[in-house]
Image (tube, rainbow, N blue to C red; front, side, top):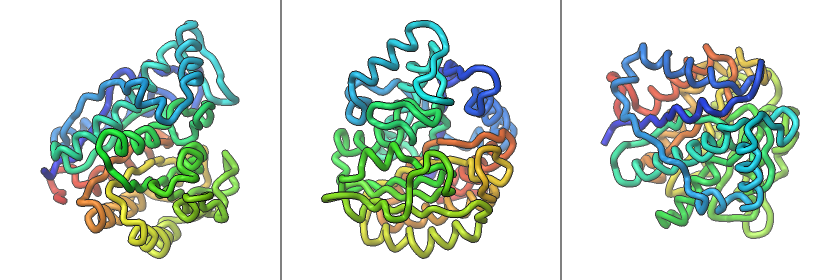
Length: 319
């Protein structure tokens, strides 16, 4: 199968963040409208997500935390579990559906229904820790996906590649002592959440399976390309993953208001092609990409288009 799967659900729009919040529903409504005017929309396989089960979510998150989020949403008003992170009555449903989209994508890739998949979800996930919402995130979608790969499909070694402009502290925390999951993050530093220093490489049995590559404000496509080729590529060759998950944040784009990195949509396309090469080499092309950040509507849509084309979507693309 050479089709790229695309996962989206209207439930993601039920997550409301109030007036003038950067993580707003227009991130997805603008993207969908944009993609409908390209050949990609009809070339991709549109897969319908289902909510993640509590068992899947609590494989990563404390049950008491999950219940706190559910109860806060049921109260029927906006709430702030931490500074700048806003929830609403529809957040719990949206967050379960976002995690569930990743699981549906994984199933579709492993059964050969699609070659790879992109999950256009919100709320994002990579800042969410086991018991704390933060950085606009509630449930850690990629971490839930990694545990699902292990529990449901028996995949032993998973690589998570995070190119969001912010460090994915929640994902790092989830696997910091786990040698079965390789977590790579390239991110602007210093920047929220002020973690992800180069010396953070894991602990105990997981020592060496976390790789952080902090970059300076103003870093370019060329700087990222060099890190992916010179650092990430040999690291994955040593680790030999059986599946790759991408935390695909597009807030490293030069136009994004929340970061200072100077990536372009073409740069995101090239990063995707490098990761695709690694997926071909190590894990039979098995790859699922999950939306994280990206807060300029025009840059986000154009960057995701470049990402999808590099994944193999579109009439002129093949795997």
